[in-house]
Length: 631
Image: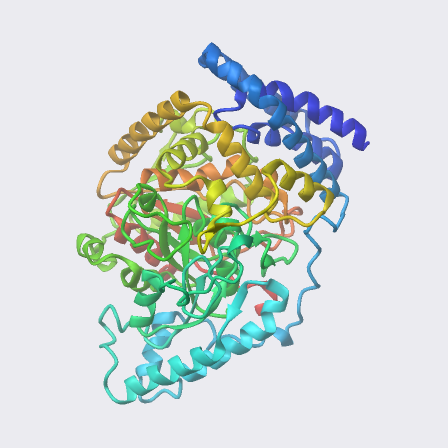
């Protein structure tokens, strides 16, 4: 069977990569093989699914051959000998994964904990804003010290199952909580209604790619092992300083994918994080550790980053609210990947992740640049009655190049749209013809994001995962060698997705004219989207086609991420909104998982998307559902 699959993969990989090595090299082949792996895992798919997939693949192949000139095809042929072995290795790794092999680095997590082990509830399910009010209330016995102790206990009890919080300094957190309580008692704390006082004394976690004094600062890159914030000239990140100034207590740092560039939170230093709703599944990436920590109620808040959906994907997979700000609104200083003054700092944006919508705005204003806050309105000033809501019912990427849209997510979006209609919004359903052509053609969303990222990145991804530490480049194996080692289970320096991305980046560099054309299409799509949405409307669209997949499965779903990443390249503000129910037992492949949507607005309208999330939560139409064992 393995030999047959190997030969089939070789036959599929070669011709497709020969014609598709620039737009979405390798990834189209991965998704075209979905039917093959579906047959292995679940039996033969329905004939209409086969027909749709084959039509989509050959349609895209024809388009690429038609548009590429002779030099591009020659370059594709040169890339084929490198890319085809890569595809075969990916196929074989997934074959082994489907057979339950553990030596590839994705070991089955321990069984779920019992109800008793999840008895800590951080004062029930109160929002961070409510907790901060109780800390100030003289009639309340709640203190920052008490909250921090409960958070510490939750981390100690839950993290062995989730691997979400990868480093802590509980004594520093306790000292911070004592200082916060003292400031409240002595009247030195900022006013509760001020930007720096709204979340005073509340525990929080931040992503490990952000420099925190005394904590690891590696972003999962093995060459950075041993680098810590606050040491050897590494200053704390701007966002961390802002969080501390607002009186929040950092409990620890959370897991990420290697260099923050994958849909799973797994890396060679800290390993793989698990989803609190199903430990066999991923909490997403690259902010999956933060998502798992907040969803399991270790803490009510997290600071996350988003360069292609890294806040919104974990928000969907863990049933949370999350916000990706307008491009350039928040400083990236002291974070990985380093943005410098390049345009990438507009695509990569830090933001809040929370269980409650009302917590998004105060944390966002804490993180944002003062000029950004001054330019925004206030969520309280947004009137939903009469506001136009555009609805995209299907993902942007053409079916066959992406996963099928799960019926449970379709119903979740209908639930949100119906609720907005009941709140007085004017709902307008968009067809694919109403959307920018380049957004919905083939894998346009992913291709445009990829090209715009490549054109803006100040350093090659290969250099990001192989940095110079103290003036010395880290040693290691070549990228092809890394991929081979990942297949055979040998010690390696990089995760398979990181090595594959670095290798593909070199292939994409062979087609500068094609990338330039995609960047021009991106500028056009940005203008068309903002003309469509306008300054006083929002757009509702799917976050992704599927809820949280099993570990390693994102290798077959790469193009799905175009649904979130396109808005980074467009610099539009987006809020992830969860629905208050889980998938049912009728959804046998994904029962008991969170669902949600994205709310998108024009640049500078962050307050509008957050206002929609808050209104939906207040109406009971949106909420963060508890994992079943939390009750």
